[in-house]
Image (cartoon, rainbow, N blue to C red; front, side, top):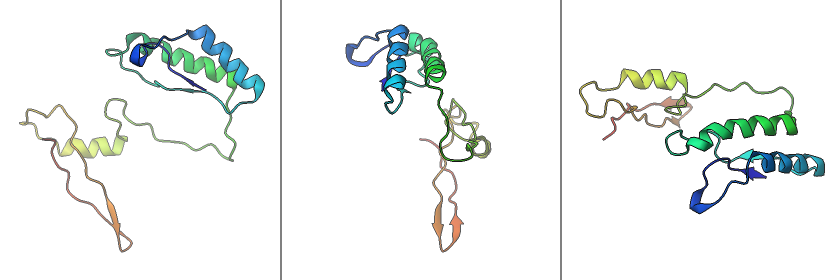
Amino acid sequence: MGFEPGEQAAGGKWEGKVVDMQTARLVKRQGYGGCMVWAANPSAVQAPRGAKVAPEVAAGLARILEPSWRFGQVPVYTKADPNTGWLPAVRGEAAQHRHKESARSHLPARLPLSRRESGSVAVMQPERLT
């Protein structure tokens, strides 16, 4: 079951946190697949209400559903920068290639993809955003 707390697209109306939690309890009680939050980190500018309530709904769903990892040891993931979506190592590499004089220097540099060729990794030079 998917939830989208706060502002809705296309004139939709959020039923509220109480209804979301009641629905999560039903999902757990009936043994359905689970729940997810559509707007996991909404912008405080575009969706101020959603930015406040989405984390509250996610925490409430976790308390009700008590999710567990079913496949052996839980993996440990590197957290991405919430502003760029990049991993810390990539963000540091991109900062070295940023052009200070550019009118777009406040934007992250666009890093190219790496491709495997004959067992080795070929890496191209980053390109500036234009």
